[in-house]
Image (cartoon, rainbow, N blue to C red; front, side, top):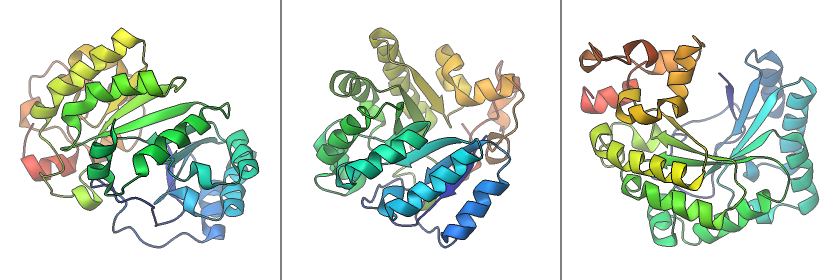
Length: 276
């Protein structure tokens, strides 16, 4: 469980699956500092838009305040702007963080341009991640699984293992039906279509020694890899969190062996497909 803290509403790329599109307001520095102070989760996800578009001194003030209060701080970015930051400020930020969470949802420039609608973003992101990897804090690659890229998940694993040596793990996060993806089958694939490709990607992870997590797809679709499933772990530990409010079991869940260890699909998935 974590406090998701968008610190701005602007981004330098335009991902087809963007869940932040349509979000507005609430980015005043004093208000953000208050949110951090009132947090009871102990884990702060600094997000946006892309938070690297905010004034670096304000970013550092927010992160420093969180660390002073003993929070785990996760910094979510697409990494395209890493090389634009002053190296001293970047080093200061890295020194305060617990880990970087980088939106990286394509393994080659052509696909990346389709996903981000931003020519040149892929090369800048690769350079950005390689720079982050020199700063001494774990880097998680967040592969948002959606209609344009789910068939290429295994290729992404092999690309990352080859070209981004030193990253800590990949999170395969099935697209949320929010923002640009809301009620949109052109962005949100059916679980039954995406699952075989995800399972192949997980086998590649095992082959290559790549650690990974998976989220937002019911456990039954990735059963062989359930120990890597975020919700499975939370349900086994009886942990509270958004997974209990955002997801809902459906008729297809009746009789499933995983019923007690899986909260079901996201409600926004049910709005689109009605069932598993």
